[in-house]
Image (cartoon, rainbow, N blue to C red):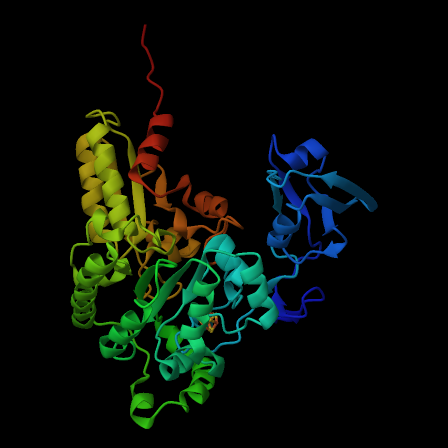
Amino acid sequence: MPVVSPLSHRRVELAPTSPGTVQAVSPGSFAMELGIEQGDRILGVNGNPLIDALEFQYHAQSERVSIDVDRSGSILRYELELEGDEFWGITFTDPTFDGVRVCENACPFCFIKQIPKGMRRSLYVMDDDFRYSMLYGSFVTLTNLSEEDWRRIEDQHMSPMHVSVHATNPDLRVALVGNPKAGGIMDDLRRLEVAGIDFHAQLVLIPGVNDGPELDRSLADLSSFGSRLLSVAGVPVGLSKHGQERQSKQMRLSRTCMRVLPDAQRERVHVRRYEPEEARAVIRQSEGWQARFLQERGDTFFHLGDEFYLMTGEEVPPTAHYGGFPQVEDGIGITRFFLEELERYLHRARPGILQGQAGTVACGTLIAPTMTSAVAAFNQRTGAILKTIAVENRYLGPEINVSGLLGGSDLTTGLEDDPQTGPVFISRTTISDRTGTLLDDQHLDDVARQLGRPIIPANTMSEVADYLRRHRPAIRRVA
Ligand code: SF4
């Protein structure tokens, strides 16, 4: 349950018990030179208590800095005169000292409301924290910002932000975000633009709701922003079978917000998954906009999530289409990125370099046909004997078919009949950077133990090749 942070008086979760704790100090950094150590707690800068790492970065760049540090109960004070561009090199155990700010929304498609019990604790946190948007690229709705937050974003120039827009039609956005405060999205984005803050926008698309004419309206409205708007992405709504049942309370809350919609539109807000034909129509609609953006902005600018292409069997667009992959961390263009990297690797790899080396590539069912061809090309060039296994998501339901949402139990079940004994390669997106666990809270080492095989997270086939090369069986010389 969310608590109120004693530091910021906001509703938060995962509030650290020891805020401001230093997790690591980079070698050669200014903090190391000062003697700041792992385990120290930074209490404040210039007499101001800190609520997050960003505030530390901001205040610690002044000309005169006084830092209070708690080292095992003793308070140390560092009085410094600085040049203003010091590399502090401090990593905090928790970047937000007051916890993670929770959302005030009730989106009818909220994935967190669809997941069963027993998963990673952090997955249940309905975060909507603008600080994580800047630090890690999390998408935020901006509905929970106070005037104080806005001033901080502006004054400290917190850029870039990643904004969940969904629709620019104010009434429709209120319904889709489940919050009466959500209707002012264009004003919010304009405020970011005026403050010189860069931002990316994302639209979670729902068939018949915010695609078609509403998508045209959203893209026309968003195209009124200049170069501060870096990219727009459209991703299909993800709904598990159980999700529809589990999110009934969320749907009720959301319906309260839908009351603001005209009757005809309210009827249309029904959340369901895309059928291939509908996905194809979104691709065609997007192509028109991409051609227009290419002419007007010199960039396709609007990108669709890979699922749209994979579920229709259409080829994912070429690399040039993605304009530098601005939202690849969110999976936009990750398939093309992977294939492009594979091609480069195959071009430079010596034929037969991995002759006879065996292993398994385990992936979600959506990417499996593409992965099977990629692995076949890899085997053909290198001589490796890798096999692709499409792992069904039993944990969340087979409708959830992306590799990044597989649990440890899915891997053990999906690979139990695999006669291979070599390593299992999985997408790095399956593992939490923070906890090293899979979605069902199983640690990678435990899953590997159950399978009796090493499990290797990798994002590219070069990484796979690299692992195989380093673990080549030793050749015994017979005298
Ligand atoms: S999807 Fe909506 S309701 Fe769910 S956490 Fe995100 S903002 Fe909150």
